[in-house]
Image (tube, rainbow, N blue to C red; front, side):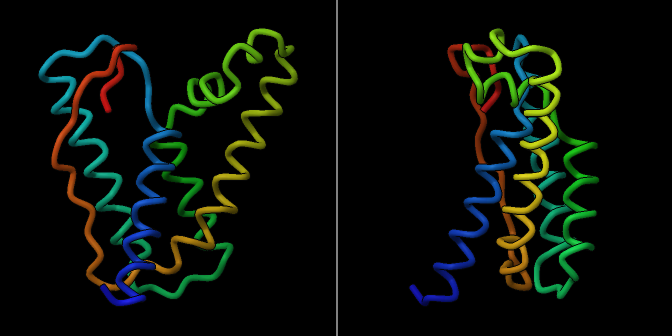
Length: 138
């Protein structure tokens, strides 16, 4: 495996993992929910690779595209709650809102640097999905 391929695979994997964490949402799952989840993640992956793979964008342009995708595909409040765990309920509404803002800013800053490494032709195929014990489609 070449270094470029390893780096591209790692970048794509990190991006997909981050997307999955930030964009996951709890709900009762049915077969059509699993199909819908696969379709949504597939659409996001296609849009991300079409937007970033092999393209040279300014940091501002990358950040703007990521912000747009987070707004359209994300469930940031649920993700914020999940990340803080039991501390979420101990935080005031003001603290929860501040954390949610910081989480999005952090995601954009982290991903904007890594997403610039996707090579032309990069694809992310969604091959499977399942419902976990919490009722989330993974």
